[in-house]
Amino acid sequence: VLALISLSFGGAVGLMFLMLGCALPQYNQYWPLFVLFFYILSPIPYCIARRLVDDTDATSNACKELAIFLTTGIVVSAFGLPIVFARAELIYWGACALVLTGNTVIFATILGFFLVFGSNDDFSWQQW
Image: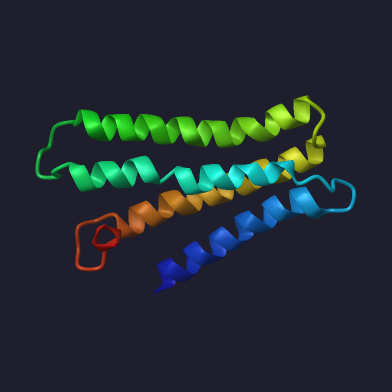
């Protein structure tokens, strides 16, 4: 229960930083909300790979490695998009810093979710 509450709090704090980067009166640009797509897309390759791969094999699996590679590309893109927006002067650098802080918190929360609920016990995200 404590893990679920802390993960919820982490998600709320990360989204708060994202919203602050968009909605503060001195920034007032909503371009950084496009990183929400990356938040949704980032766990999908790894979830698909976990369903397809048999975990009894101790060696590395190409499907899992590809999923980690795709997830890494999505995460790097989520960090790169606000920097590109700031370099193109669509958003201010302060808004970029707030969005990058929100990205760090959100992706740490997603990683924490997989670490807490990723084991093969009775209560697992694999049952979903």
